[in-house]
Image (cartoon, rainbow, N blue to C red):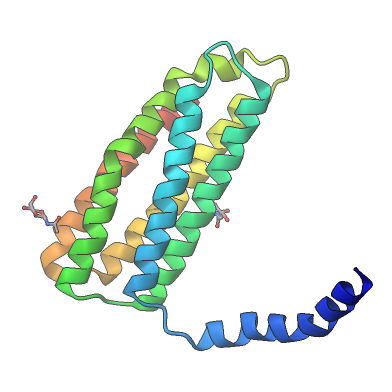
Length: 184
Ligand SMILES: *[C@@H]1O[C@H](CO)[C@@H](O)[C@H](O)[C@H]1NC(C)=O
Ligand SMILES: *[C@@H]1O[C@H](CO)[C@@H](O)[C@H](O)[C@H]1NC(C)=O
């Protein structure tokens, strides 16, 4: 055990160096953006499933897990936004691929945002207060993080796909607006 620990301490600076330095040099590219979107898709599915399973009678543990799922989606959105921005303008075919991935996710995003409203009584009825306010805050953050990703995609989309990127943004924002209004 001691030997493992000391080996770990010896190796640690090398590991940290290899984590920090090359990443700055690696170009962020479309493959990275697609990997980010795959991660985002998984995180959205997790939140969608947790909301579907959430009882309208309330459950504090599950409610806090949903909050954690929302935080995970926010962080995945932020990572994708950062990589879309550093990738810069993309080709027609790459942009079409990226938009198609996200377009395919829209029904799940819409269902998640409808379900969070359907389950509101399960958050308001909890014995401790503050959870509906937490859910509302999560929605506002997620809305902001989604807008940031949409804006980055619009900025880097070819002119031919600008209407698609804008339509995608408007569709998702409208679903957020409805959900946030239900908690306001
Ligand atoms: C999401 O957006 C909120 C509000 O704009 C911001 O404070 C937060 O840092 C973002 N989340 C992440 C994980 O970056
Ligand atoms: C862009 O939008 C047009 C019009 O709705 C549609 O026909 C086309 O398939 C979309 N392209 C992509 C890549 O989604």
